[in-house]
Image (tube, rainbow, N blue to C red; front, side, top):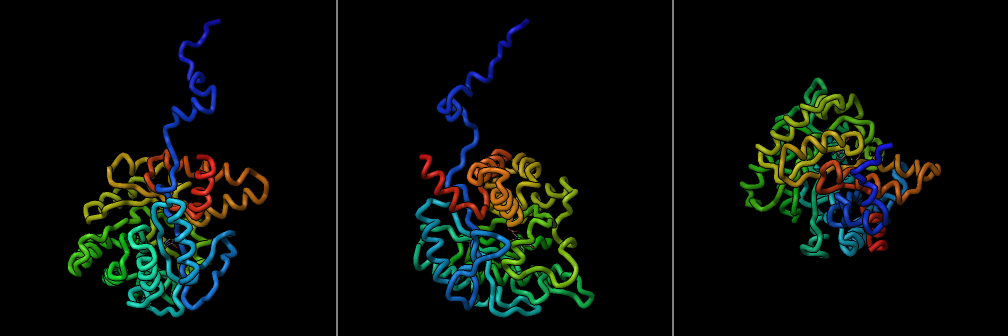
Length: 328
Ligand code: PBG
């Protein structure tokens, strides 16, 4: 009977040894907290499809972000829920729109202590729910849409956003936003491009939270086909050429292979978005007793980091930061 010479188990013998050789670490500063801010509400409104998450009022948003800052979380990304919607999504670039007001408020309260990312898209603001403006035949007009993204980005930068995150998957959106920001004097405002964003059922809870489900059709003419991998590389390289400062893969759990491939393609900071449906799956599994909630969330986020993501957008950010503080 030959004995094994190489014994990897030597390094797994105690928790201390395992900690010593751990390759991937989760830290609060790697996490980005997605927050919904809703116009014309005084109290946070619970989101039924995302247990534990809320549509924040302007006041409760400040408290939630206060919490995130104290926990050491890296950044917040803001999604607005306006009181009124129209065909163009004009509240997206309104000077006193829901997100612009929130950004100014956070800047005022927290200065630079909190990195503020503004999601830049139209679906929460259009009455038809698509991420762009429509032609007469109902299709999304790419070039008309990116002009509106550029206006939105400038208004968000003017309000004080550190980073603009275009999520609409229109061609040329990063270049259009970069040019508009530079022209308006916001050369220092960065762009986090949702580069490889798939058309997935996993956005369902977000759409009910933001009331942004398309009223007709679907998003498959702009978001990517789940079956494609090489196309994700093409999208990412285009965004980098167009001037993205950071890139993102979305969703995370069903796209870990894409996270890994993008990691190999770029040295830019890489984010992965563990989306609303992935959050809901973890919560439902834990509630059904399938696994321990805390262990499942920590394992999942560690796997996303292991695949190559520097940063993880997760609705569990504050929970995780609290658990990490308890362990330390
Ligand atoms: C679109 C946008 C969506 C999400 C973030 N930005 C929804 C969509 O594309 O339908 C989804 C995030 C999530 O599911 O957590 N602006």
